[in-house]
Length: 299
Image (tube, rainbow, N blue to C red; front, side, top):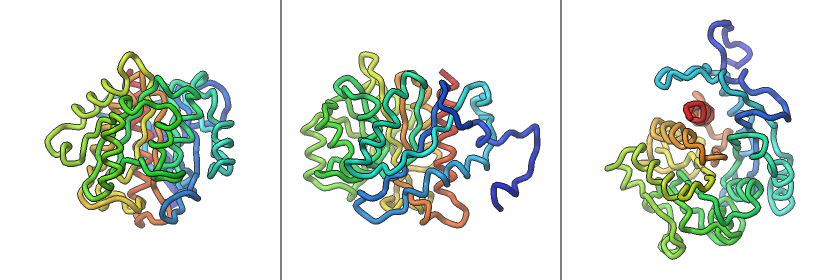
């Protein structure tokens, strides 16, 4: 069933109606960054921002558990960044993203591959020395070079202190010993997938916020959806059997955005062309947008 064929009920507002195309001030700004060319594996992640926007029509504006209706906040959709790949693409992202934090309280960037974590964060904060980074990811993203496997390393090289970084969900057999050692050498706090079997998401997020946001630092959050179990995110090529649940990532999005230090969140590593017929991955991504918006509204 297409979005156009969905039933209309004036008492059941659809979440896609929250986002208007505007360049004015709003509480929450959505921006697509459809980078895909530097991915280690071929991907059609550039199709994903549009797919997430379409999926938003499947959901309402009301969080039953939080008793929050998102119509109480203001939203804007800034569209997609043109040609965001490579060195020239980084400049395009910089031109589109710079200054957004002066106009919006929370920026949500829709990837695209994970390379956008570097381009978006470095554009939002030209001086990275006093911000924090929290990643939900199966991978360290500390590879050499410029790819979707290197954004955290690029940020460190650009001035982000490793001690300000918390990586949650790092999986076994998804990283090399060398890059694991690099994380340790740079003082990154790593909370492995194995640890998450014994701890709640609430507890882990609280620790992440305490470390990344120490001293009131503003925080950038990277939600790499391949942290989830492969069965729930078939459109994430690097997802592994045994990842976290979709519900756990939804909880994390809400909890992170509920903290005023969190100023920007990205959602990455989904290849919409690989999704299952029921669109479970892009629908999860749309719910991450809404959970983040509800978390923000709970501040």
